Image 1: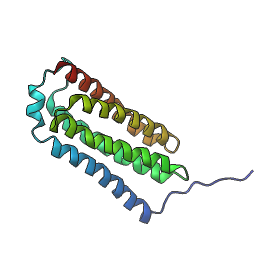
Image 2: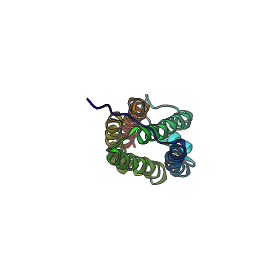
Image 3: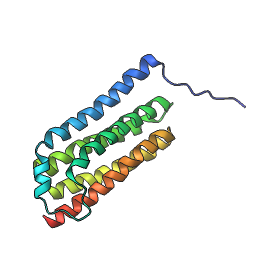
Image 4: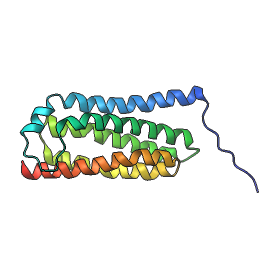
Length: 164
């Protein structure tokens, strides 16, 4: 029986890839950050459900989640021998959907459109997690809190849309 040996990319290729994933996630975060300027006031004026988190909680949660998303992407790229194209496509899609949500919700006050976006985002994150699992259990575990938060945020978005 022939043994297969897994190899990881050389550090000269791996570090630029890590920087690329970090840059892609940072770009997503920056779009949200720019669109969220003044969102604290908007959030405070909304009719919120009793279970809505305080406004100050969103920034630290998103910072931690964005780090996990970037590391997860890099781990899959590093571990994948083949079949990474589908992961990368869905990974990019979820970043685009993520970037679109804040301008829709806070920038344009289109709560229904934002809900459609975040439901699609949750589906894309779930597929991203499943595809990651094929290559790296650690990457999938890093994506699990992201999926949980996006599903929670979708429920919050739905409640806000219904009440406002």
